Length: 134
Image 1 (tube, rainbow, N blue to C red):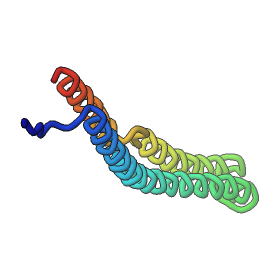
Image 2 (spheres, helix red, strand yellow):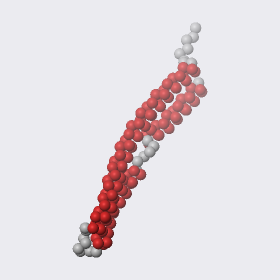
Image 3 (tube, one colour):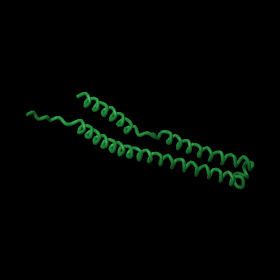
Image 4 (spheres, rainbow, N blue to C red):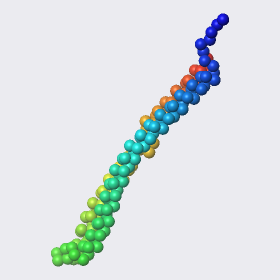
């Protein structure tokens, strides 16, 4: 009597699907981790945008105040307002541009997860081809 040590096709497929399930869970965990890191980067960029917006708001406010108070003695009223308002607008614009630049560097697709999924799909195909060839 000969004893076969080989598993049935059903057992092999069941094993493959269990492993695929574990791989998918691991990939989702990795994706969550990567997305959390990207969200933290987005929060930092958002803070820069908020600071830039506040600076721009106060720039506009001071432009109005300059119409009344600033440099009215030395320069004409319009020139004094233009100097102060223009300077604050430039500062606000620079801060806003820095925030936008940080937002553009945020990677929406998690690179490690994407590469890992490609590798897992390739491995699964190879395993199925090997098992079916036997």
